[in-house]
Length: 267
Image 1 (cartoon, rainbow, N blue to C red):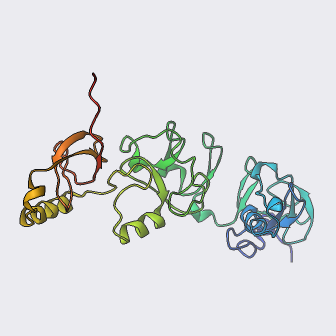
Image 2 (image 1 turned 45 degrees about the vertical axis):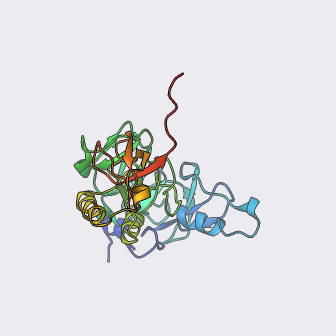
C-alpha cells in the first residue's frame, strides 16, 4: 500500500517527546556533546550534577545536530528527517532550533525577543521598553519598566524572560510568575516584592483600617506623637500622627507606608 508524502510527514505526530514538548527528534547538546529530548531536559539534568563546575545550561542557538526519534538518524538541524522523511516538528523554528508537534499552543517567533513564544501572535505585542511580549490587553495599559522581564522571579527566582510558566505583570510594572503571584496573595501579601507598591486595589482594606484606628484610642503619651513616613504607593514623604495600627498617607490615603528619619533641612 502506497503511503502519501503527507502521511509520511505526519507519521508519529504527538507520539514522541518529553514532559516539555511533543516532538519527533532529540538534540545533541553542543556544550557537552550529549543527546537529550530537549533543552530543558538538558538543563534539568546538568543542574543537579555533583560537581558545581560541571553544571551548565544549553544555548538554544548553538544546537547544530538533531537525532530523528523515528529512525534514529543523526543529521543537521532541519524540519524534515533526511532519512525517513517525517516532520520532526509540526512547528519548526530554524533560528531557535525549536521543534514542537503540539501547535495548539500557538507558537510564533518574536524577532524583537529573539526567541519563540506561545499563545498566538495575534494575542501578543512586543513592548520595546519592557523588552518582552505582553498580552494585547496590556497595550497602553501597563507601567513600563526597562527590561522588566530580564530578571528572576522575586518569589521562586527562576529567570522570567524565557520561562515556560505564565507571567503576571503587576500594577507597578514589575513581573513574576502568575502562580507565584497568586500564592503571594493567598498568604495575604499585597505588596510588590521588588518596589513594595500595592499590587491590587486596597481601598476596602484602607477603609477597614480607618474604622479600626477610629475605634482604637492611643494612650495619652502617644496621642499627639507625630512621625515622618514614606508612602510606598505614591512615594510622598509626609508627617503623620503615630498609631500602632498604621500611618496613613495624606496624599493618596494609603496605609502602605513606613516610618523614616525626619528630613534634614538645609542650614
